[in-house]
Length: 356
Image 1: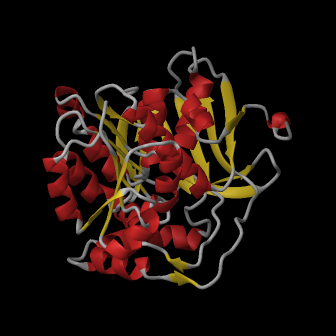
Image 2: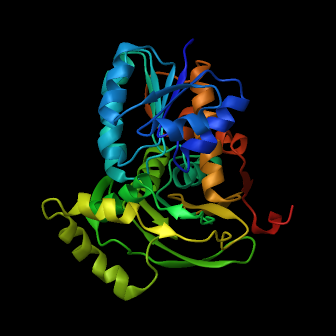
């Protein structure tokens, strides 16, 4: 496919380095955002389209991008809006992690097939790291009975505001509440259930707990298992805080409150940079088959946001080369688990291999 890659939210924490990485790969780029001056500083010669998301979507409808890269949250809102604005044949990829965003985008699968478009949600650390190690463990094997995936991100803090995309993801996760798959059905549970202390292959001890996020959706789609838990180290480890999460979700459903909290949270500012808390970020999968056989594996990468940038740009470049197929997907279901390796990860299926 010919045409440019459009990066929406090109001045954000993911958008900026994604633009640079795509530029180094030789991609024709269009960068978008609200602030023309900030866009000019990151454009490096790329075409600039400044305006609100509504204005950018109007431009998308009038042009023929090869790929649209969406880094603007909340993705349950922006994802369907952007996809509907794209002309037939234009592919889409985002870094969503809200469960509701995955459900909405995958609900557009038949339309994507009919219009020759590939839609990829979750091209970031949590989803790709966990589904890639899961698919690696499942290769050539029968459908499992139970699956648990755990995302253990190690993120460096940059000076500056938290940002609207991340703030929207946090608020959306609280609104979505807890979820897990039981008897082949996605059901509501209490957020923060199924807490488990894990020791990574490098010896770090972390606690993860279940959340209703994209990791759960991707693991369910990838495995077909009737019982699936998606857990994250971002879930509160404190039992009191976990118990309060359903009430917080209920409170956020009051008219206008979710938007207000998102805007306030987006403006929360870190005054200094902080190193990531662990050397590595990890995706972990534990699989149990009907026979009773159990297998566990880990995927290792560095700083989680850097991996997200690598994943997003790798998927966008592959889509721009026509390597996808029509429909709605998560990254490893579309391109296979090795796409995570191309983005900078490695598989560690035996903890004894951690130093290799």
